[in-house]
Each structure stands twice: as C-alpha cells, then as structure tokens.
Amino acid sequence: MRSIQKSREPNSLRDLRNTAGAMYSGPQSDWQEALLAEQGHLCAYCMARISMERSQEKGAKPKMEIEHFLPQEDYSDQQLVWSNMLAVCNGSTGWKPHCDKAEGGKNSLGHFIKGKKHGDVTLIRLNPLSTETSEDILIYSLSGEIKSINQTAEVEDDLNLRLNLNDERLVQFRKDRIDLAKKVLETKCPNRRWNQRDFDNEIEIWSTPSEGELKPYYKAIVWFLNWMKQRPRYN
View 1 (cartoon, rainbow, N blue to C red):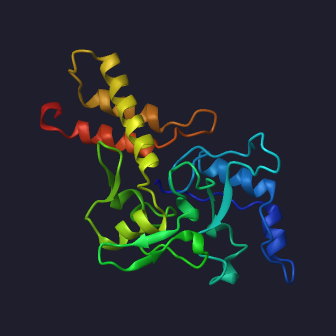
View 2: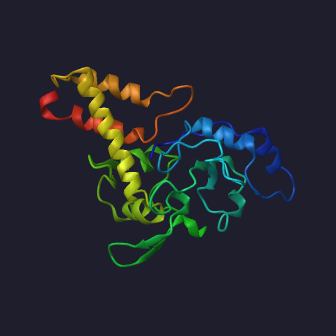
C-alpha cells in the first residue's frame, strides 16, 4: 500500500454533486481515468495493476472499480466526494477475494471481523490517503507478507481480514517482485559489493513511473532495498 495524493476532481463529478438530488449510480469514464492517473494505475490497496481494459469475456468489466473509502451505506453525504473515491482492482487476483471484495474472518481473539465486501465496513487504522496511515505503519517480509510495523492488532485486522492483503497469491506476487529486485542488483554488481548509492539508484528506478504507470507491488521492493541498505555491511 502506498499513500495517494488526490488530484483535482473531474468537472463532471463536481457538476453532478451540485445537482439537486444527485446520487452515485456508478463510475463515469473520466472519473476512472483521473483515478488511474493519480494512483499510477495501481490498486489503492494491494497495488496490483489496474486499467480500463476489459477481458474478452462477454459483459466483462474494466480491470478496475471505484471504491468509496467511507462506505456509501453509512456515509451517504460522501458518495460524490472526490477525496472519498479510490481506484481498486476487481479483488480476484488472489485465491480468495481481497481489497474491497474481502469477506472477512476471525481474528487472533476469535472475533469475526467483516471484510470490505459487506459494504458497511470502514478500515480502522489503514488509509491510503495518508502516509501516516499507510506507508509509515507498514513493513514487508522477504517472503512477501505485509505487516504492521508495530504488530498493532487493528492494523493486522485491516490487512488480513477487512482487506485480505496477505492472501497466498498476493504474498507470492510480492515475493516474486522482491526476488526480481535482488536479481537485478546481482546482475548489475555480481560481486555483491553494493553501496548506499546503488540502493538509492535502484529505489529511484523502481519508484519512478513509466508513461504514468507505477510498477505493481513496488512498495515491497522499496522496503527490501531499504532493508538491504540498512544492513551493517553496506553502511
């Protein structure tokens, strides 16, 4: 998960919001395009690639959807507010639904926690619209898991139950990207005599958009490179 800086809202959304009695009835293409642009074509939660493309199946939807961070069911006054809209994936890249399609489950205390799929769920601690509630409180593991930096129960419940971001396949996708970043490092410097500049250069490369698109799961790679950079042998 990365922090998202909201851009200027589309004029069509502003005009609709200013129309008496208007309600959210589905995405408009200019809203989707604007969200894709401000998010670097990555899902706001799992960071998978999203786009307006459709599969070849009849009636297939675009490979993205608009998610209301504060659910419409409980916050009807926020349904046409740009700062409450995020672009997310279809929640189907894992073994089980994730992101805003997560079903939920029991936490470490045995309490059932509803997932975002239920439509009336608000994340307790995580919020991709702020660095302090996304990047600053999350870390990864070499195996691809995403975790709370302080093992905070509320963050863990957000990650694992309300969003299901540690679905087995998502974990593998992140691990694959970390392994790729390590392989690139070793290719560029086979003797493994990396220095701080090498890591900084790689972080910049992986974090830089190409034609407006960020690399999927790149925050896991950035974490890995910073982890390597901080090891005593490279200081």
